[in-house]
Amino acid sequence: MDFYKILLNAHKGFGYLELLLVALFIIALLVTMFSFSGKVNGFLKKITLFTMMFFHIQFTLGIIMLIINFTKGMNMGAVMKNADLRFQYVEHPFSMLVAAVLMTIINKKVKSNDSISLAIVIMGLIAVGLFAFAFPWAKVFGA
Image (cartoon, rainbow, N blue to C red; front, side):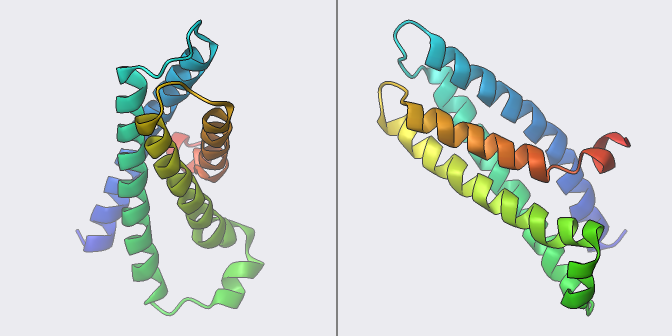
């Protein structure tokens, strides 16, 4: 088994875990937002931290895989003309990068604030929206 296949299997495996973490993050975020006090609890802090960590792990694995593929001599013009390749090599990595950056900002704001603000919720929803857009649903669930 070559190095790329190991990275690909790790990237796919962590993808399932990331789906679970994102679902828990959204639930914790909305429960905190709609609770009476709006105070940030320990569960939200921990789930935000773990979601951010796995976003970064996924992004690092994905970038390594992207570099390995582009060192094989891929033509960027051909990639941009093909919708599937464009999603895999341009839209997916860029959307996940922005989502990982937003999760890092959210983690910092959740750690430093006692109560949740609308800005944190909006950033969280944008990060999850980008994640949902860039997630390869058909490849993971075989649809």
